[in-house]
Image (cartoon, rainbow, N blue to C red; front, side):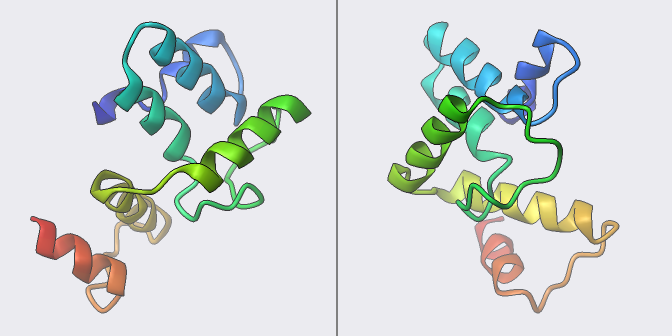
Length: 108
């Protein structure tokens, strides 16, 4: 499932818009769990203002994502994805004292 989180990039050269494109594409094909991953993977902190990239979405799309994040309860997969982002952002240095890292290590 996790390998499809960037499938929205099939739409062309787009930045943050890829999350809503991937969400729509996977949901329209009946893959609800993967559509959720497409959207959540760019928002580990459930804050619409925190993202990495250019905001090339419409106001309507941004509003949808904001509402979706507010109504979605993150699960273990989402928490694991946060750790993936932290490792990437820290040049692959996994800080074992980080509470989120400790939680993830208990899952494995």
